[in-house]
Image (cartoon, rainbow, N blue to C red; front, side, top):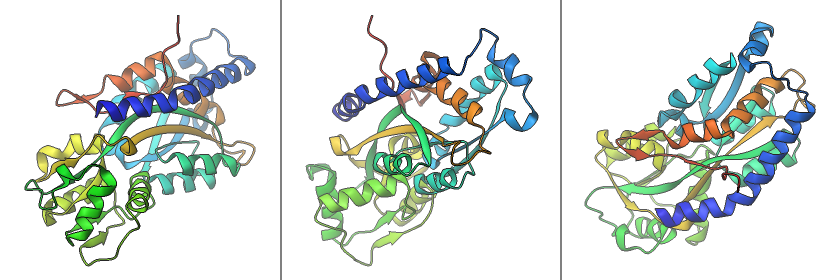
Length: 296
């Protein structure tokens, strides 16, 4: 896993610094004062104290949001309303102006969202990795497959059960990328497209003794309840970076642009990054800070 995390961190470091700098510059232009943020938020109309965050099921299922958001709400005086869906659905909410910001994990889709004018000021926030899980007996021999794409091909070649998210989530998009690397997604009776969130897919895979691709955060938070094991991990292709994007107020004037910026600034601040890195389940760190520390 260390090799995956190091690769992901190295790949995102330069861009994270650039976006962090841009965020700080924007804050300066906005004319922030030394007045405590909570006092400022308390003076805002009630509707402007609510921030609508569209995010992935992995941040919710892993328990991260329950750990991460309350300190921000207490310190800044905002209330964050979370809609937890797949990445594709979260980006659609943003594109429709039904969210103030999105926290997702599918970089190509994020870039398209910004390029289309739906979002502004994308920033790297955190990262972990994906893992391929399945029956503990490893009937497809995935532990010796030599990589994630080869592992998927082994499942298909043996016509074993595989439960896909099938919902245009970041995990589903990663799965499709791996199938492409494996030569394409074959059709066989054991391939099930669930159209469900990560927690439900893992439960289905456990009950069916099937294979599934999952983010490590959701897996770690649920594994004690599942009759499954990690069978493939550590491939650099399984890196899983998360980004946060403000919905473009020029496209949707009704969004809470100020609140979105406040939350983005906090998530990418030393305090927010430390909070992300300190979240653990069973002693295991589930997410790693994505903003590099400044060089002194």
